[in-house]
Figure 1 (cartoon, rainbow, N blue to C red):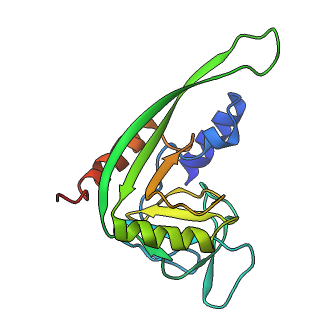
Figure 2 (cartoon, rainbow, N blue to C red):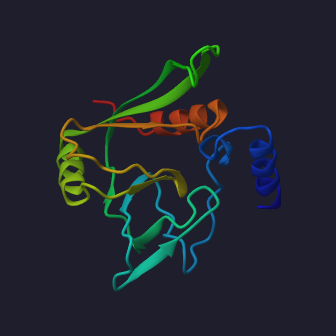
Length: 182
Protein backbone atom coordinates (compact mmCIF):
# COMPACT_ATOMS: atom_id res chain seq x y z
CA UNK A 1 0.00 0.00 0.00
CA UNK A 2 2.83 2.41 0.92
CA UNK A 3 4.58 1.82 -2.43
CA UNK A 4 1.30 2.48 -4.26
CA UNK A 5 0.98 5.84 -2.51
CA UNK A 6 4.54 6.72 -3.49
CA UNK A 7 3.93 5.79 -7.14
CA UNK A 8 0.77 7.91 -7.05
CA UNK A 9 2.65 10.91 -5.63
CA UNK A 10 5.44 10.47 -8.17
CA UNK A 11 2.94 10.28 -11.00
CA UNK A 12 1.20 13.48 -9.88
CA UNK A 13 4.53 15.30 -9.63
CA UNK A 14 5.45 14.06 -13.10
CA UNK A 15 2.22 15.58 -14.43
CA UNK A 16 0.14 12.47 -15.10
CA UNK A 17 -3.59 12.59 -14.59
CA UNK A 18 -5.15 10.77 -11.66
CA UNK A 19 -6.59 8.15 -14.02
CA UNK A 20 -3.10 7.32 -15.22
CA UNK A 21 -1.67 7.44 -11.70
CA UNK A 22 -3.79 4.62 -10.34
CA UNK A 23 -2.33 1.18 -9.69
CA UNK A 24 -0.44 -0.01 -12.78
CA UNK A 25 -2.04 -3.44 -12.37
CA UNK A 26 -5.06 -4.84 -10.58
CA UNK A 27 -4.66 -5.23 -6.85
CA UNK A 28 -3.87 -8.73 -5.63
CA UNK A 29 -6.85 -10.64 -4.27
CA UNK A 30 -7.35 -10.12 -0.58
CA UNK A 31 -9.36 -11.88 2.06
CA UNK A 32 -12.95 -10.62 2.20
CA UNK A 33 -13.63 -8.03 4.90
CA UNK A 34 -16.49 -5.76 5.83
CA UNK A 35 -15.69 -3.41 2.96
CA UNK A 36 -14.74 -5.88 0.21
CA UNK A 37 -16.89 -8.22 -1.84
CA UNK A 38 -16.13 -11.91 -1.48
CA UNK A 39 -13.58 -13.32 -3.91
CA UNK A 40 -15.36 -14.96 -6.83
CA UNK A 41 -13.48 -17.00 -9.40
CA UNK A 42 -14.01 -15.70 -12.91
CA UNK A 43 -15.53 -12.45 -14.09
CA UNK A 44 -18.01 -10.95 -11.61
CA UNK A 45 -20.12 -7.80 -11.98
CA UNK A 46 -21.46 -5.75 -9.07
CA UNK A 47 -23.94 -2.89 -9.47
CA UNK A 48 -22.61 0.10 -7.51
CA UNK A 49 -25.12 2.15 -5.51
CA UNK A 50 -24.46 5.65 -4.16
CA UNK A 51 -26.59 5.08 -1.04
CA UNK A 52 -26.39 2.06 1.27
CA UNK A 53 -29.10 -0.57 1.17
CA UNK A 54 -29.70 -3.46 3.52
CA UNK A 55 -27.02 -6.14 3.27
CA UNK A 56 -24.65 -4.00 1.19
CA UNK A 57 -21.01 -3.24 1.83
CA UNK A 58 -19.17 0.04 1.29
CA UNK A 59 -16.42 -0.32 -1.35
CA UNK A 60 -13.43 2.00 -1.40
CA UNK A 61 -9.91 1.11 -2.54
CA UNK A 62 -6.87 3.00 -3.74
CA UNK A 63 -7.84 2.17 -7.31
CA UNK A 64 -11.54 3.00 -6.78
CA UNK A 65 -11.78 5.46 -3.88
CA UNK A 66 -15.29 5.94 -2.43
CA UNK A 67 -16.83 3.93 -5.27
CA UNK A 68 -20.08 3.24 -3.45
CA UNK A 69 -22.06 0.31 -2.08
CA UNK A 70 -22.18 -3.26 -3.43
CA UNK A 71 -24.22 -6.36 -2.72
CA UNK A 72 -22.33 -8.99 -0.76
CA UNK A 73 -22.65 -11.32 -3.77
CA UNK A 74 -22.12 -10.42 -7.44
CA UNK A 75 -25.13 -9.38 -9.50
CA UNK A 76 -23.78 -11.36 -12.46
CA UNK A 77 -20.94 -13.85 -12.94
CA UNK A 78 -19.93 -14.79 -16.48
CA UNK A 79 -20.40 -18.53 -16.99
CA UNK A 80 -19.05 -18.94 -20.52
CA UNK A 81 -16.64 -16.82 -22.55
CA UNK A 82 -16.64 -17.34 -26.32
CA UNK A 83 -13.66 -15.16 -27.27
CA UNK A 84 -11.09 -12.78 -25.77
CA UNK A 85 -8.95 -10.33 -27.75
CA UNK A 86 -6.48 -7.59 -26.97
CA UNK A 87 -7.01 -4.49 -29.08
CA UNK A 88 -4.88 -1.38 -29.32
CA UNK A 89 -5.76 2.10 -30.50
CA UNK A 90 -3.48 5.05 -31.08
CA UNK A 91 -4.99 8.13 -29.46
CA UNK A 92 -3.82 11.56 -30.58
CA UNK A 93 -4.68 14.58 -28.44
CA UNK A 94 -3.92 18.26 -28.78
CA UNK A 95 -4.56 20.30 -25.66
CA UNK A 96 -3.86 23.82 -26.93
CA UNK A 97 -3.66 25.39 -30.40
CA UNK A 98 -0.03 25.79 -31.42
CA UNK A 99 1.19 22.95 -29.19
CA UNK A 100 2.32 19.63 -30.62
CA UNK A 101 -0.09 16.73 -30.56
CA UNK A 102 0.54 13.90 -28.11
CA UNK A 103 0.12 10.21 -28.87
CA UNK A 104 -0.52 7.29 -26.62
CA UNK A 105 -1.53 3.69 -27.13
CA UNK A 106 -4.75 2.64 -25.42
CA UNK A 107 -5.23 -1.06 -24.70
CA UNK A 108 -8.65 -2.65 -24.61
CA UNK A 109 -9.76 -6.17 -23.77
CA UNK A 110 -12.72 -7.37 -25.84
CA UNK A 111 -14.72 -10.26 -24.40
CA UNK A 112 -17.52 -12.06 -26.26
CA UNK A 113 -20.01 -13.93 -24.11
CA UNK A 114 -22.20 -16.97 -24.73
CA UNK A 115 -25.84 -16.46 -25.74
CA UNK A 116 -27.04 -17.26 -22.21
CA UNK A 117 -24.59 -14.81 -20.61
CA UNK A 118 -25.49 -12.20 -23.24
CA UNK A 119 -29.11 -12.35 -22.01
CA UNK A 120 -28.01 -12.13 -18.37
CA UNK A 121 -25.72 -9.16 -19.15
CA UNK A 122 -28.57 -7.47 -21.03
CA UNK A 123 -30.83 -7.79 -17.97
CA UNK A 124 -28.12 -6.55 -15.61
CA UNK A 125 -27.32 -3.57 -17.83
CA UNK A 126 -31.02 -2.65 -18.08
CA UNK A 127 -31.23 -2.66 -14.29
CA UNK A 128 -27.96 -0.71 -13.93
CA UNK A 129 -28.41 1.93 -16.67
CA UNK A 130 -26.99 5.20 -15.35
CA UNK A 131 -25.02 3.46 -12.60
CA UNK A 132 -21.52 2.10 -12.24
CA UNK A 133 -20.82 -1.61 -12.43
CA UNK A 134 -17.66 -2.90 -10.79
CA UNK A 135 -16.00 -5.60 -12.91
CA UNK A 136 -13.87 -7.99 -10.86
CA UNK A 137 -11.76 -10.74 -12.45
CA UNK A 138 -10.58 -13.49 -10.09
CA UNK A 139 -10.96 -11.18 -7.10
CA UNK A 140 -9.14 -8.26 -8.76
CA UNK A 141 -11.13 -5.10 -9.50
CA UNK A 142 -10.32 -3.99 -13.06
CA UNK A 143 -12.96 -1.48 -14.12
CA UNK A 144 -16.04 0.39 -12.91
CA UNK A 145 -17.75 1.89 -15.97
CA UNK A 146 -21.05 3.74 -15.96
CA UNK A 147 -23.63 1.78 -17.95
CA UNK A 148 -25.04 4.28 -20.45
CA UNK A 149 -27.53 1.93 -22.15
CA UNK A 150 -28.48 -1.75 -22.05
CA UNK A 151 -25.73 -3.96 -23.48
CA UNK A 152 -27.39 -6.22 -26.01
CA UNK A 153 -24.42 -7.39 -28.08
CA UNK A 154 -22.83 -9.75 -25.56
CA UNK A 155 -19.53 -7.92 -26.02
CA UNK A 156 -17.71 -6.39 -23.07
CA UNK A 157 -14.77 -4.05 -23.60
CA UNK A 158 -12.50 -3.14 -20.72
CA UNK A 159 -10.29 -0.15 -21.49
CA UNK A 160 -8.74 2.84 -19.85
CA UNK A 161 -5.48 4.09 -18.45
CA UNK A 162 -5.63 2.21 -15.16
CA UNK A 163 -3.83 -0.93 -16.32
CA UNK A 164 -0.32 -1.42 -17.60
CA UNK A 165 0.27 -3.45 -20.76
CA UNK A 166 1.70 -6.22 -18.57
CA UNK A 167 -1.46 -6.31 -16.43
CA UNK A 168 -3.68 -6.26 -19.52
CA UNK A 169 -1.74 -9.16 -21.06
CA UNK A 170 -2.07 -11.13 -17.82
CA UNK A 171 -5.86 -10.56 -17.73
CA UNK A 172 -6.18 -11.58 -21.39
CA UNK A 173 -4.15 -14.76 -20.79
CA UNK A 174 -6.25 -15.65 -17.72
CA UNK A 175 -9.52 -15.05 -19.59
CA UNK A 176 -8.35 -16.97 -22.66
CA UNK A 177 -7.93 -20.04 -20.43
CA UNK A 178 -11.69 -19.79 -19.78
CA UNK A 179 -12.75 -19.60 -23.44
CA UNK A 180 -15.24 -22.35 -24.20
CA UNK A 181 -14.19 -24.74 -26.94
CA UNK A 182 -17.27 -25.67 -28.94
